[in-house]
Image (tube, rainbow, N blue to C red):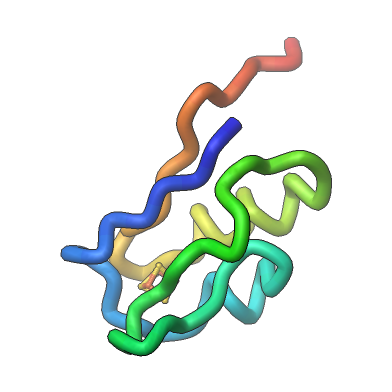
Length: 67
Ligand code: SF4
């Protein structure tokens, strides 16, 4: 699955960086940017970042249900 950031919504709060520092960093524009977009492991950290982004600016593509 892949991560997408909607920079139009991002306010640069840093929550995603704190929760999943392997995937997110704050860029020169003071908005979140991806270090890598493909989620291989540490998935829970990414899902935490998605769930806790105050602007709902992060989404996941191609998420698979493991039911
Ligand atoms: S948690 Fe959301 S609003 Fe905050 S920096 Fe990350 S993407 Fe931007």
